[in-house]
Length: 190
Ligand SMILES: Nc1ncnc2c1ncn2[C@@H]1O[C@H](COP(=O)(O)OP(=O)(O)OP(=O)(O)O)[C@@H](O)[C@H]1O
Ligand SMILES: [Mg+2]
View 1 (tube, rainbow, N blue to C red):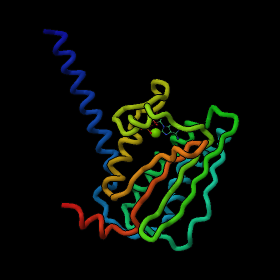
View 2: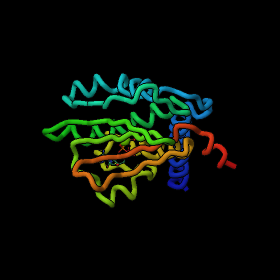
View 3: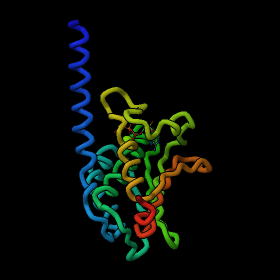
View 4: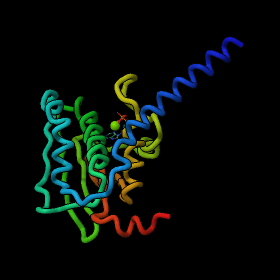
């Protein structure tokens, strides 16, 4: 049947497209885990987005990062993760009158915690439950792909980290926890 052939052809093209995106997202996933300064990772992410933020009048403040703080990681992936996180903050505030994003870095004995806060008033339970779903987006058609957090989930898993939503805050706050050293995480891996 002609229709069936057309559908099969379209499905194949979509499949190839997704594979292509996955290949792009995998960039950096063969890199070795190296101790890298968290400051330099955040600066790398900021360089990629700060001019866009300026153009749209979005202020981005980064807290003073504890001196010498390092994490054992694939730096390209963590940069991408942070970029995904603050791009979501950016999208959430562009239409608000108060357009601010604050990134705060703190540490516990074993972990680094990166808090990304924005002027938005939180994310609903319904959206949070779909956050990591492939192609889930609430943004207008053609604006975003809904892949950001799906890609981020792979990065979190690779690093033994976690992403939590802080439901106690009046603004939108996501907390990204990352182990300083991979020793325990890699030991757990099969
Ligand atoms: N800081 C935030 N404030 C409000 N909603 C958010 C925030 N971060 C994520 N979301 C919601 O989660 C959805 C999924 O996020 P995700 O990053 O996976 O996709 P996206 O931003 O829509 O597209 P992409 O990241 O591929 O460009 C968003 O569409 C949005 O509804
Ligand atoms: Mg996104």
